[in-house]
Length: 109
Length: 414
Image (cartoon, one colour):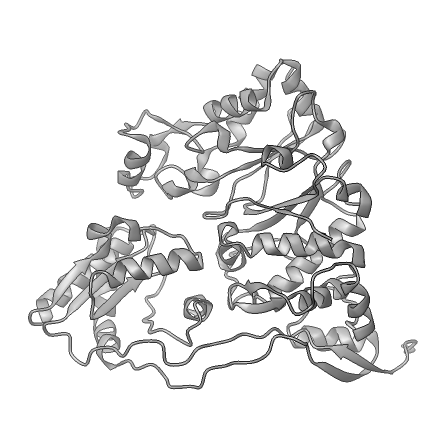
């Protein structure tokens, strides 16, 4: 096929967007869960509560003196799907208010 | 898992700790869920105590000015290069030359270094300059820039929930409705087939918005955008003007109902599911017409009722074709009369929902309900947005909002 278009030298504006990422903002996990507080976070999607209920039972069975808190029972606000940055921050504050050493969540469908 | 990994990125973190449990979780009996939890427990326990965040450096940079680079080749070569770099949706683009961007920026008085916001889900920084780059690639004319920027600022408002629209499993539709003098000034289609083909302003603005969602926001399948099927609306989103000339007597246009002056030029944006179409050609009275609506629209279309009760706080969009609007108005109905009837007729019994949908939250919002209780789409009739859309024909459309996406209206400023 004949190439009708000419090769040209172009100057183009790069459309790549800047994505900024902070480093080292995530806390270390505890080395041992004995005596620690584990918060279970359910976002209200179907069956996530059943899954976390069983995880809570297994934690209580296998870990000495672990305190398991189901966030959706003590902070009903957290049982929702509202994927805005502001809602995520409000959610994080609610969960932090429970003074967890670790949060286990079920974020998917 | 890819989508899960984008969640910390969207919050500005490098990573979070995940354990993958094989899907599905929903639509399974409780015994299967217990088994999945038991199978995953050891890995969850390991991750709980062994996982450590990596200590990578922060990624910082400068959003303005955009770099200029040299490229040798044809326009077709540029298009291929941009597709490979994921700067293009795959449809043809115009090369973003510095001259073209310079011309585009003449269409708006905003400074090119102004940051409009971070585009979800990967939170790419969008400057006015970068919006002009994508506008140029989409073939926009400079005079479209104020509408494009106002729409982008609308979508970047948290209430619009652009993040879910660009990353969720649903078939999301971005909608931009334009009101006011700007519709005529720049040739926004607002009559026959307004949201479809042949209207350069509508098409190129809709294309630019989706280019930005894809390239700046990173809304690409399967990573970041997890839409199960998606739709061609991911290439060019909905942009149309309200057909203000076809408003029945006494009915106000959308922007005036939302607090703006008649003479203001305004965009209203939201994210929705694909529309349900009402093609009632037969009803001779508004009462008959409402019965038609009652069988094609209901709260399940956006997981309302007990499934996701908070969507009842949102604002579904009813795009009435002029002929249906005039049938409704011929019964001496105001917009509010129509809203009340629509709210009433589209309720369905609570027994329709699966038992797995918990009812506690619904009871908090609506009071105690039995299986026979009729559940509405919204908490109150006045939540429905009504716009007169399109031209001749007995066709109207109902857009159920995406969860968490509220309409956002922005004044268009030159």
